[in-house]
Image 1 (cartoon, rainbow, N blue to C red):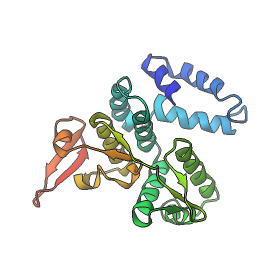
Image 2 (cartoon, rainbow, N blue to C red):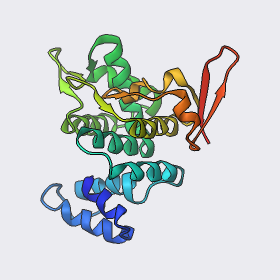
Image 3 (cartoon, rainbow, N blue to C red):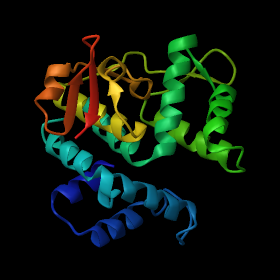
Image 4 (cartoon, helix red, strand yellow):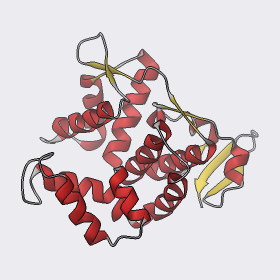
Length: 225
C-alpha cells in the first residue's frame, strides 16, 4: 500500500496508478480478469487510497498530510484508518475482534463469524471474506495465533501513534460507524485494538474535521463536521 500512497502523493492520475498496481500484483495474486484474485485485490487497493468513496475524501486528505512525517509502525495506522474508513466489512470485523479480545483476551474465529452473521447475514461468501480480512491483519503483524484452537490475539504491544495519526484513526472510526460517538468511546474504540491512541477532546475541538458538543453530564460527543 505504500507504493500506492507514493503515487497518489506524486499526483499520478488514478488510471496510471491502477495500471501500476495491476502490474505490481502479477505473480503475487493469480488471474488476469477483474473477477480473479488479482482483480479483486486491485479493486480493494484502489478503493483504499486511489479512488475512495466521496464521503472518505476528507479522511484521505487528512491521512496524506501525515504520510511524509510518519514512518515505521505508525505508518500502518494510516493504512488501517483508510481501510476502516472505506471498507465497512473490514470495520465490522475489526470492531468484533477488538471487542472479543477486550472481553476474553482472544477472539475465536467462530465468535467473529457469529457476530458478523448478525449484521451481514449468512451469505455463502461470509466466512471466506472474514478469513481474508483476518489474514491481512496477520500479515501486518496486528493479529497472532492464540493458544486456544482457532483463536487470535492482538500484537505483543499496541502500536503508539502520534496525535496527528491518532486523529486520523478517530476520524476513520466515525466514518465507519456512520454517526457520532461519545469521546470516551473513540480513542479506545474496539476497531482500533492494535493501536495506542493519545488524543484529547480538546485536540478534536481544534480540528475542523470534527464537531464536538459538550453534553449535560459534562461528557463530549463527537461527530464529523
